[in-house]
Length: 199
Image (cartoon, rainbow, N blue to C red):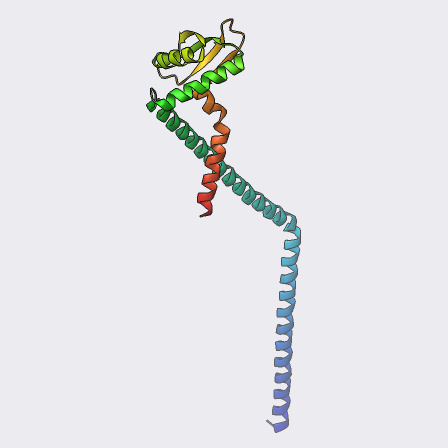
């Protein structure tokens, strides 16, 4: 073969090789572009579904956070109620342990004075524990109060005072006093709990 013919064949081969490489490259780019276009079309077609899924996921997270927050709040309030109940029981035990003491006598005198002030009468029907009758009788005699007794429960602390005709009643049992103070007791417990949490 002549040298010219060899060069021609090599030239044609190089041209075919270059063309085929260009064609393969173009085909690859074409398929890549088509693939990207298809992916974009699918994303667009499903974008509302993706947005809805994202929205549902967000709502689900928010619900779980809210639910967890409410659960913690319920536990916190239950704990506050439990502590308030413990405080009330401790106060009642302490007052019960002081029965017959000077401090308990002063408490009963305060309650009797309040009863007179509220009922506007010195003739009272007093409901109390049988254990408190002696001290109330003694205080009533000193204070010039006419008293008729009704038996309350043995563990009753404090008294219930009524006018003789029953038109006015003053409830001054320790249970009643503490129940009126329950919100105050809870607020003190919350303040203490908040301080402990901050530390």
